[in-house]
Length: 175
Image (cartoon, rainbow, N blue to C red; front, side):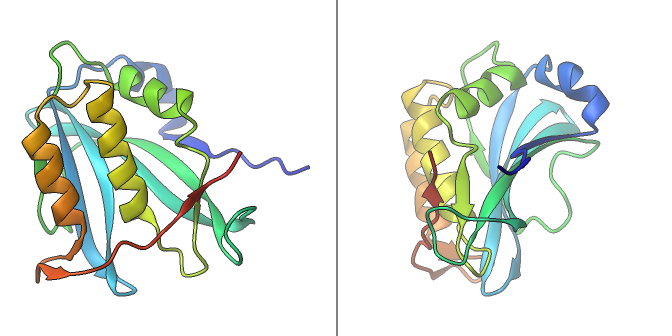
């Protein structure tokens, strides 16, 4: 039996404080291209110049149980001293329910087992994961603007900054 822990807080000693932070807005962000795709993750704006990043990334060390040759994901929740990092290619603003806390977003992900995700053998699959979370956040009424969700899902189907079409790579959830 593996001792794999799929969730990590950075810094670990700030977990409780991070989860208690108010969220002002959520941004979905494509980062600089690597391996022919952009890495997408979410930034929960906690002040005008700080955020908490929710980033699903391949572990590369814990073998997948669903996708052949892939690896299980790490869900990394990081407190940042910036709104979004410099390698962001664009940012897609998502309106939220007032009074939202980082912990409510995190709890929704965990309660729906969205942290139990696998990437393919190339370490690709974050766009599929991000698309799924957009649907979950909207269904749970964390994100309130349906047209912003649709626009962001359409943007995930493009390579940034070129904005050329890029089919969605598939990841998978494991039990």
